[in-house]
Image (cartoon, rainbow, N blue to C red):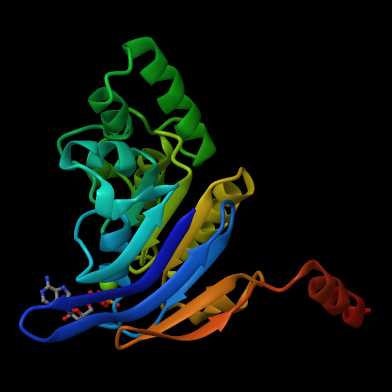
Length: 235
Ligand SMILES: Nc1ncnc2c1ncn2[C@@H]1O[C@H](COP(=O)(O)OP(=O)(O)O)[C@@H](O)[C@H]1O
Ligand SMILES: [Mg+2]
């Protein structure tokens, strides 16, 4: 689903943002990417979402070799990947409904279908009645929910979130992470950069740790047997 092989990214003249990254994420996985500021997390996500190209190495997303993709096909790949950012990136002069509808409008979907799908997405993220509001009238947590609804409206197989809780307090962050878990449970592959260790230790998720452009640690998600064992120990 996402595969990076010997990926390097050097920003000229000499910033080695990523060095020999080898990652494979299967369909339906939930993976955290963690590491200090400047480690290379955003760079990695920008490569996967075709906003930048690696200096060398191969990247495959949803069966497509990104090196072989033509510029005119980049929007098609982007439709397969929903992206959520720390600062939400909502359009201020559009309502919540219009923000979420935008990717569908761009894809030329007809209006009646857009209305149905946006309403469903609003319900899914717990904002059923917020469609007519403008982003400025929503709390930070609600704005991030809108951004998540917009990211999943095209039914992407992959959802990438770059520090999605960086601007939120602990309680709201937990709600947002629960929402990602719900989306993952419906089959979407979820890949989240965060340096909030509280989440990482919760839920037995797979964790990739990056530092100075290198993957320095890889904690696989606990197998069912291990989780069962831990539950048994609680009694
Ligand atoms: N466009 C760019 N030009 C030059 N250097 C960059 C650029 N983008 C990021 N970098 C550098 O690459 C390294 C990794 O940055 P980044 O991927 O943003 O890390 P993170 O998201 O983990 O904080 C940093 O040293 C950063 O300064
Ligand atoms: Mg970053």
